[in-house]
Length: 259
Image (cartoon, rainbow, N blue to C red; front, side, top):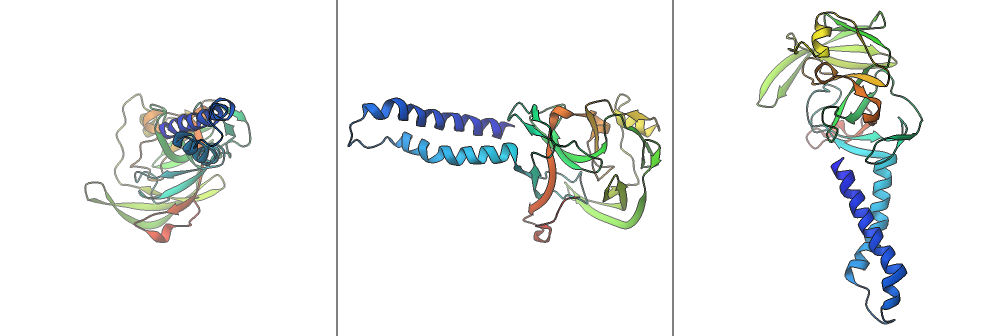
């Protein structure tokens, strides 16, 4: 969000300088006078900044994965692209939708403004849609009374920050129309009594409110998600992740679609 504000400020500044020169300052200069450097730079950068701002706001935006909460689907260090129009066109900065296209679907990997601090962007998977009834028993999801199909894949070993090596069980889960892998650890996270995670841990049924989504990380026992900070409001949506375009440590991941 801060980068978008910075780009908007630069866009407005360069556009204002170009406009001011076109309608006022140019007429006051001598015919053979050299164009001021500031005006020259503004005229050069304004079209480029306008194009970048338009693409990032309405078409596609790059993000970097900062943590392992979406493993094994996404790894820390993955650079991804996010479709900005899948969930409707939104006013830059304000993020209010002005043109409806599609709604998030179960299984989507989506980017959103972190509800407790909207200046921060998070990425998780859509698990619950508005009105869905969710249970999480024995580390398996039940949505609207239907237990999701899972199949064991094997062990998955990874290193957490601090060089702690962990081994989790990898499962393949069918979530809506999307089949994806998740990680399950033998230990369970601890949740405060007022958190959704505590209710789900006690096998309570949780209903997703209208205009909200329930998000979980694919690394189910090592993810700060809706179980910790609550539902994702519709106005916080940013877009749908769809492509890995770079990973400097694991180049084999480049070009992979995100499911």
